[in-house]
Amino acid sequence: QVQLVESGGGSVQTGGSLRLSCAASYAYTPYYMGWFRQAPGKEREGVAAIYTGGGSTYYDNSVKGRFTISQDDAKNTLYLQMNSLKPEDTAMYYCAADYRPNPAGAPAPLESWRYRYWGQGTQVTVSS
Image 1 (spheres, one colour):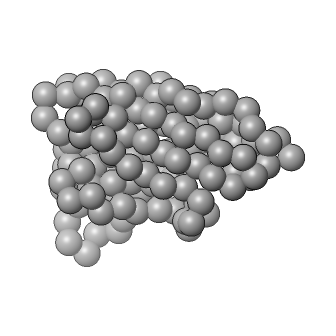
Image 2 (cartoon, one colour; image 1 turned 180 degrees about the vertical axis):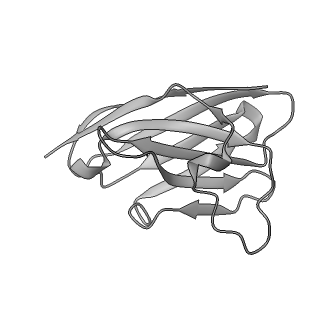
Image 3 (spheres, rainbow, N blue to C red; image 1 turned 30 degrees about the vertical axis):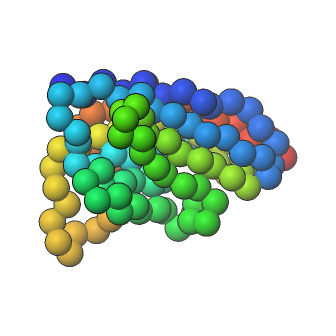
């Protein structure tokens, strides 16, 4: 069983920054953890993911160069540093985790269907 609790959301202006945190509790470290977002009327989309065993990271093209995913193993916490925020980044942000490995040659683990465990989300609003 994995429990995930997000925090750090809020309202910022265009160009601002926020750091999201995901406090995780689990018996065994999941293989993959990620951040997803969902805007009103839109499907949930993958933003960033990390392979906890080796630190490999994956990003959606829309956030590359602006967002950074990281983990603090000692604190069992996942982070998403978001810089140069844009109004289109406005969404509910969710933390997710899964124990399944990503087979060689498979797409980056940014699809919501591959994650079993989810947090409740934290709202990010970027105003122009």
